Length: 146
Image 1 (cartoon, rainbow, N blue to C red):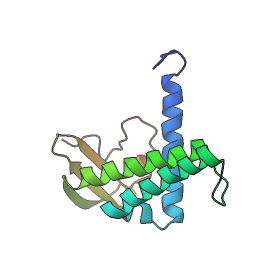
Image 2 (cartoon, one colour):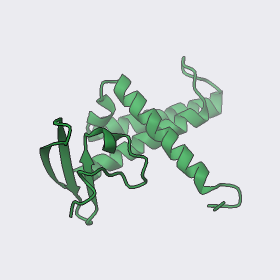
Image 3 (cartoon, rainbow, N blue to C red):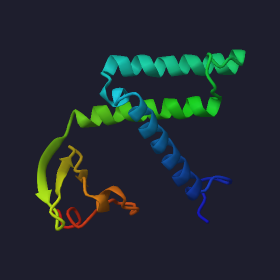
């Protein structure tokens, strides 16, 4: 089993990253996508609020009228910082959007996103892509993209 340090495995990292992603999606959905639509200032204010909440928990042992703990609050901070980085990245990209008709006759939305550093992300709304468990997500509509 590969280790990142003397007691942390890559599998633990993968599991934690999935947990944080699932939590972000759940919270963003419950807030009607407001987490991903916040502007720069609102996001920075939110990060500051989370840091203040951490201070309150660690110094006073308070929970600010909600069930929380240091771990949950750190995950919330991680997700807020991650979202802010993605917003920064998204301000410098080229995106192409179109629709395709699948073999079933259903219409699917496609996106190819290219970042200045050459990274490319290809997405599709078909069920095969949505439920792909591959590390590098793809479906028959995206795997042959250039």
